[in-house]
Amino acid sequence: MPLALPAAEPPPDLLKRVLERETATEAVRGNYAYRQKVLVEELEVRGRKRGEYKEARDVVFTPEGQRHEQMVGKPVSTLDRLRLTEEDFRDLREVQPFLFTREQLMLYRAQFKGDEQVEGKACWVLLISPRQILHGQRLFEGLVWVLQDSYAVIRMEGRAVPQSLGLKQENLFPRFTTVRREVDGHWFPDRTVADDVLEFRNGPLRIKMNIEYSQYKRFGAESKITFGEPK
Image (cartoon, rainbow, N blue to C red; front, side, top):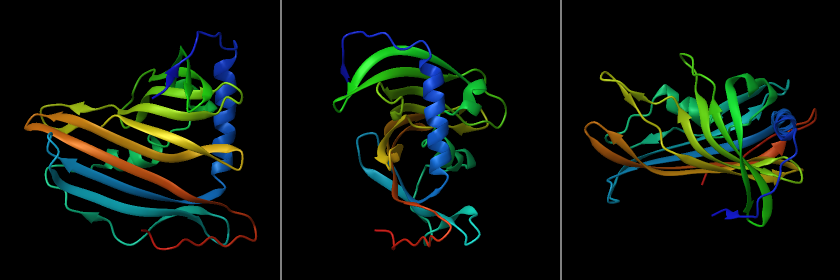
């Protein structure tokens, strides 16, 4: 868990520096191929496993340099009560690996919450929340930890919003944590984990989620990207 440090004052342009760093990270990550493996498990609240969903996708490049996704094998699902929705799959691509770039500033408010230490690294903590949520949007709401020496985001905790609690439809989403690792001087998503109880009308359901982002490989004009079979 993050450890609290004595209070410190952030630079007045902290948000600007974070946005610039995140925008640069997004631009660089767009030149990398990688594999994303997803495991979603549904359990009884006391822990008995009911079913799971597994998939693996490669983000790769064509010989012409076009970036696209391709499924590795076929998804496997033994889910019982849980139904994964379009919003769930959008969140896997847009929210769990969230990067807080300049173009997203109009969508969010950022509030300074203090400073903490994460694995020996001094960080600023920001609370990120949507200004408003328009129909069809999927946004992040939660905390991000920013390295004080480089303004790189290394950790985020929160959930995808909005949730749907209407009488005709329930679409609930677990709280999650995404941690990043350094790749060629930039901090890319490494793993997302969640373990949460969703309070559906027909009874609570415990959800565990594990997403791995691995095998980052930079694409170049002469590159040929290949991956092995998923394990």
